[in-house]
Image 1: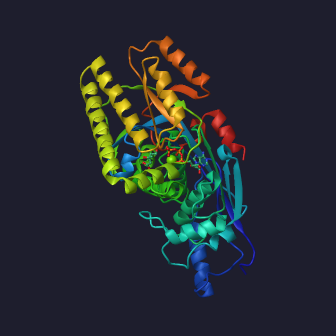
Image 2: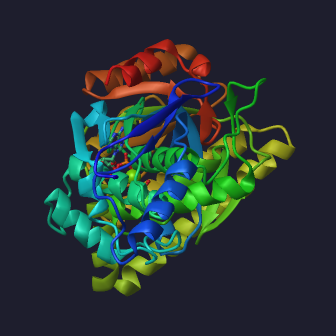
Image 3: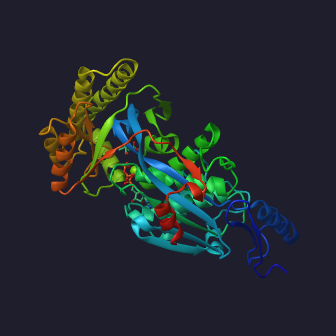
Length: 444
Ligand SMILES: Nc1ncnc2c1ncn2[C@@H]1O[C@H](COP(=O)(O)OP(=O)(O)OP(=O)(O)O)[C@@H](O)[C@H]1O
Ligand SMILES: C[C@@](O)(CCO)CC(=O)[O-]
Ligand SMILES: [Mg+2]
């Protein structure tokens, strides 16, 4: 009776439709047939896939990268560069993922993915810890070894992991298409993996109905409440674990909450009183892997604990002194002395980052070129290439900024002034998304 596929498609109020799907397999294993059919119908009816568009910002770390992995303080800011994700319900019985930034376009039969689910009733993917058995199965499924750093494999593993875990409760995995496009350079220290993971988590939780849509008739862009953001952040952290190995959680926290955050061992504090900082971002375009760099610091710590641990302690003190200085600047008029302190902290931290082995000659060049114009720089994110930040003082003349940007471009780097403190994860109606972004997301 249930040996063929059937669909019920109903228009929704916003855009798109939802689909009730039935698979060819008929009954749930381990359950009497009529019971299985009832459950399938129950879950199918519940499974009103809610189409959505979400976005999350990238980040720059002012101070505390790497040290934060070992329980020290980090100060991080969101950027005005975002990752966008569009999730569409389909009736193809396939799960499709389009990742144009990394030239990856894949699809799987839902029936094949269902074989990865454990027996009915078994727990899959606790939000608080990575399900090692599922990761192992997914590695086999995708065909990657444990030590792989391949960009595509990491992105696919994170996607499948979050998809399966979020929809595992309903045995009917939905047929859908997910397209992700980012304004952020991939793998350059600006939190592209976290913005990607935050978008995946928000979209899956929203599509499954686990969290409600924050959009209303009046709002084309809206944010979720604290409880929902906490859940998004936790699932995004699992995505980061798959991509990074041992993330601190600071990047996904900024992708979720946005703004300017102090982060230490999972404790997130929004800094509300901070001065408006102007920052240049420079991408050396040297590719690197956060996972490898984080593991390299751990090796150094194991090899020379009495040398490296005090350096991380000092980075912690740099972050705390910076936070204190920013607070003073916000409560009083910022003075040139405040900026002198911020510049000295940048120099000190850059030296520390070199000591722990995450520098790169291109980053040394960045520091030298900007210092020749009187400006101070440090790497941001995992280092080893990727991006650096340069602090601009209020009195820095326009011509100095323009000449610095040109000098850095002459080195072959990308360089631009950025705005910090953008909003965290958001849901958008199509009306609120820039046309070019919609166009890229709709192309697939
Ligand atoms: N737009 C995207 N589309 C698909 N995958 C992405 C995208 N952005 C990031 N990723 C995934 O994240 C990986 C890059 O993560 P990685 O942590 O190494 O760099 P980052 O997050 O940009 O830098 P950092 O962690 O230092 O801030 C890519 O290899 C890919 O697997
Ligand atoms: C290098 C690191 O500290 C920041 C990467 O943006 C890693 C992490 O905190 O997960
Ligand atoms: Mg990352």
